[in-house]
Image 1: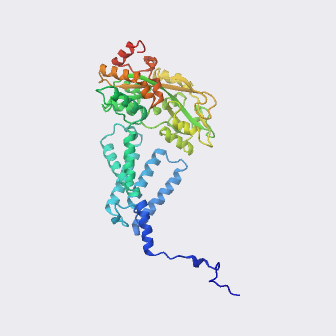
Image 2: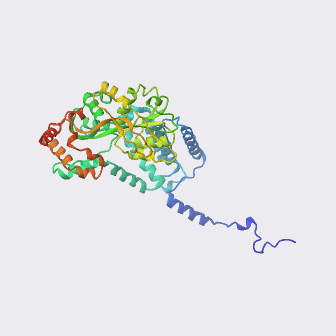
Image 3: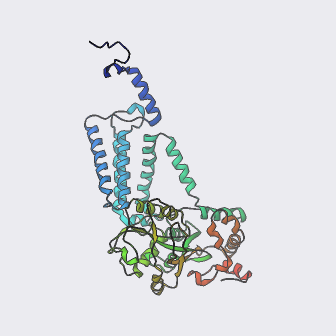
Length: 453
């Protein structure tokens, strides 16, 4: 007996097809564009070129997943691909959709050129972060123009605005910002602002160029600047210490399964030695040298900040990293608490004697106590170095006196923002902890209190 297709339940798959009108499709498309922005539907040569770039980008990232590409080069190359595709696939405005025009091609070419400039410059380019030359400035300005425009095309106007606001907010680092705020409020003739940099080396270069009057720095980087050594071979930086602030502890961090138990085991491994322009890199090189290793020949070296290093070790892109800072450091705490990973800290206090013999009495043997980070069940024998606040040779004694007096006596206001300010103590103001001579104005205050100097 034949089935009755009109009876309930007797339907074929084709009976459920619903016709959608062109008008409904246009409305749906308009809704998507309103939410996500207008995208080009490229045909012909433009479509083939865009597809080819996207495929090459995907293959490059698959290749990089095996950590064959150094992280710094990976970052630059990824940005170049992303900018080019943003200009090709997203029009300047809705009325220019579905065709590639000269104002899409030219920004793409400039994007590739700026990234090639950064790659070609290598370590010299990254080391010039705070003292760029003329071409660095020109290329930087071009990149700053390209990036917000690419972001606007892909996400709308709100994201570039939000990004610029975050950049402005980031100009006030937590401890530096707290110090600047206290000085500005307490001293009527002082208007202090904080500037975020790559670290001690960049800070000292800003003082050398006259762009900053005060800076946080680690003692070893400050001594190099004073003597015109290492990263300061272009000229000595006249420095005076205002305050010895807090000790920075060297962390040599790895995870179980890396095959690293001692400093000697770093040989042949992928290791991050800190970001360019930071004092972590300075001290890391010295610890590696004192451990009998060659930083260039004995390891595959990356130049990553602590947060980037943590991400890289989680992704198995690196085997270990160096970081010098306070305890606990948030990024290291995050790694220690990561499920499925057990963080390990490598002992290296035996390097202190050799470092002091070569570079002066800058370092002391210390410990990161067991339990400072989750899962650390024994003390970690380390090297540490003191952090300083320094100035150049232009600050008057009256200003130096007033600044030091304010920082010591308003310490509680700064501690409320950053607990390391607990070390802003007169007990720490002894010349043995600073290779940089104290400013006469600072000494005046210390002697009034009968301590330090």
